[in-house]
Amino acid sequence: MNKFFGTFNLVLHGHIPYVVSHGKWPHGTDWLSEAVAECYIPILKVLRELEAEGIYTKITMGITPILAEQLADPVFHEEVSSYLQMKIDAAEEDKTFFTSAGETHMARLAGDWIKFYGDAKHDFEDLYDRNLLKGFKEYQDKGVLDIITCGATHGYFPLLGEDASINLQVRTAVETHKKHFGKTPTGIWMPECAYRPAYPWKRPAGDYADRDAVDRYGVEEFLIENGIRYTFIDSHLLKGGRAIGAYADRFEGLKLLIERSLKAQKERDVIEDLSPYKLYKLQSSRNPDTLTLFTRDPKTGLQVWSGEHGYPGDGWYMDFHKKRFPGGLRYWKVTSPKCGLGDKEVYDPDEVENRLEENASHFAELINKQLEEHHNTTGEEGVLTAPYDAELFGHWWFEGVRFIKKLYQKLAKYENIKPGTAAEAEAKEKFESIITIPEGSWGEDGHHYIWLNEQTEWTWKDIYDDELKILELVKKAQDNGSEEYRDVVTQLVRELLLEQASDWQFLISTFSARDYAERRLVHHHNAIKRLTGIADRYLEKGYLSEEDKFVLNELKEQDHSFQHLNIDWFKNI
Image (cartoon, helix red, strand yellow):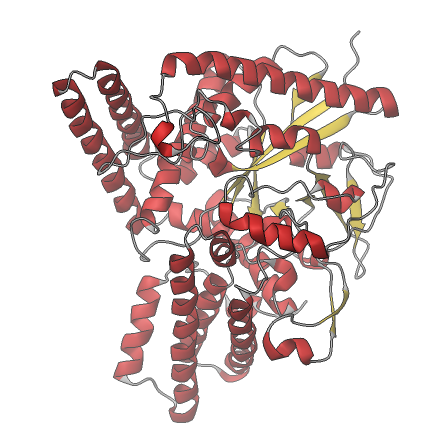
């Protein structure tokens, strides 16, 4: 009888910040529509195809609360249909042009785009009735997907100034998950896999840095308090050493920041007797409960994450950056990760299938090898956790979703390993080790530098000011608040959640959409200032003026996520 080495836990983290009613192109709803067309619809298609083939499939799928809110939003549904039709029209125009120019291969590629977006439009409108959450929930209910949650708006937990803010992010996440998926989530992807233990902490931005430190709970306390049983960390938080990182290969603007940060960081010694293929627990200081930790496997991670050294950098795959305008469609291949846009060669889909077969076979064998080595060393079954941003597949790496399909086809032939979900592993595992882990994230420096640096410090000063002011107003609403006043404060809390999204600091640091991120931060900060003025005037006069009602309704219409939001969630545990 063959020995069983363990399970493979693919974790896909789906997230786009709130863009509905905040622009269209190049950053706005087109950003989310692009992810729908190239990532989310293709993932659901692959799940259907694997199911039809009888292939055993298990995936841990993260859908952030703010992404779920947008995917369920009728306002956004119209945007997606319009976007897909626009892409179909652009492909048809390209095909007509290429055909008239005698460029038969390019015309064929344009025809492929017509089919790609046409199929996506059919699935979106007819198969899922414009709500993709219907499709994801279907596979959750079938036991194929373990859908996990995240911070409500992807707020960066370790840097939030108030414990109440972390609780707000987590409680809103849990309630939003229940709203869309009909069950309480048991797992969470901590935004940016960022963690902070309990210790006397002070806000690190502005004049707050000169104030006395205050005792803060560890992040695990808020997860446990809200019923979360497991989460995910980078390998350096478990074993020490240098962080692998996830983004530097894709964002040139990060490289200088990271080089400067690493010079100031002291690399932790590697702890050899801790393994990323085992599960560990963090113990709550408040009750007997614990939080289970899954650790990113460093061996398989770079095979997909690295745009230069991993599979997506293969010269035959479609290049992400070079596009033909005005339609914005892609007709070129990577060619070489280092070559300029002018040197990119035309894409050849006939060559791609061979590369996908090779890459999927290599990855499946690598999974088997790592779990076999762990089993031979420890005598135990292991769990290999491979976490990725979902949008990496299909978006950054156009063929990536097809890679996932081929990978599961390959894994079905192995007798020693099988796919599993985090929920299944957490429920099955017998634990012996309770550990502590240091502060950090899965950023390239292993800490917070991508999100807190000289270019983003001002954003945290604004967030800290807003947290404190809104906490005061929430307490007043709880003590003696009319429904009208509570409505104002609810919108204040909603704006704070949107302001707290870690995406804004990331986009500033990477220079990928800096202007957009700065505008969004200013918008939400200014909205909070306007609303606090309205709240203060209400407390003074006991009613809302017509002008204040107009401003409130205008902001509620634009920033309308989390209609179920309860300001009582903005509290300390």
